[in-house]
Image 1 (cartoon, rainbow, N blue to C red):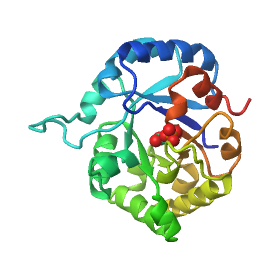
Image 2 (cartoon, helix red, strand yellow; image 1 turned 30 degrees about the vertical axis):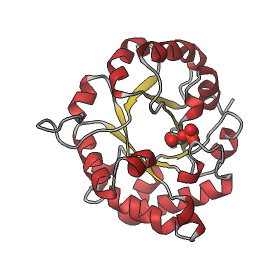
Image 3 (cartoon, rainbow, N blue to C red; image 1 turned 90 degrees about the horizontal axis):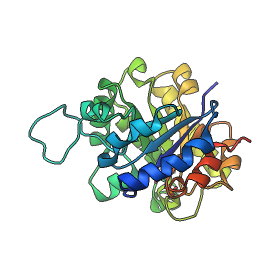
Image 4 (tube, rainbow, N blue to C red; image 1 turned 30 degrees about the horizontal axis):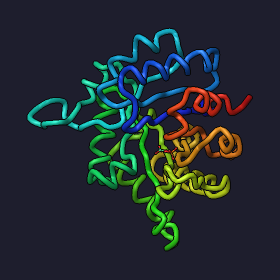
Length: 251
Ligand code: PGA
């Protein structure tokens, strides 16, 4: 029912030539895959280079961030319209690294999600608790605050395209993946919050991706969980072979 999404977050890696080489390696390895949506998210400067290389593949292009204004005196920012202009269809919003290092809050995330939706971009809306929050028993409290804060003011129709990514901060880039049970429990909780905010139908439809040290050897177990609808992959998306085998987790 929910089509899985496997998204590669390239973070601050890959120049134009490196990105093109990665796509050249990846594209044939995922050719013919039509049961999974595939997304890659390079740095802003690489975005306009990729549409030509992705033509004829089923790989979609995402940015890693967006600003909420369309244009104006906002040095250093990039608007939804500019991302569309560069060939992106998706945008990652509220990644924990942006929350941690760049002052992103539930309020700025909310503005960005609204702007992305208005600009016809699909938001990949990231949430996740820190290790401290988990150890204090606050995981659900944090997730509920992030989901409600990030989606505040949206109607159910506006919310419909949104993809959520649950990424426990303690699992990102650490090699310490959440267990299938921990991930499933968090995903089911988040789906419940969506049901309470919007409706059961909206909750049944929304794709919730897991992120945090997803690798070819743990993706299958995660994807077997009923509420896990895909993965947001950092490190293992930087090589064509490992990303392709994550995309092909079901084979
Ligand atoms: P990781 O990153 O797969 O390298 O842990 C995931 C992410 O930050 O999206």
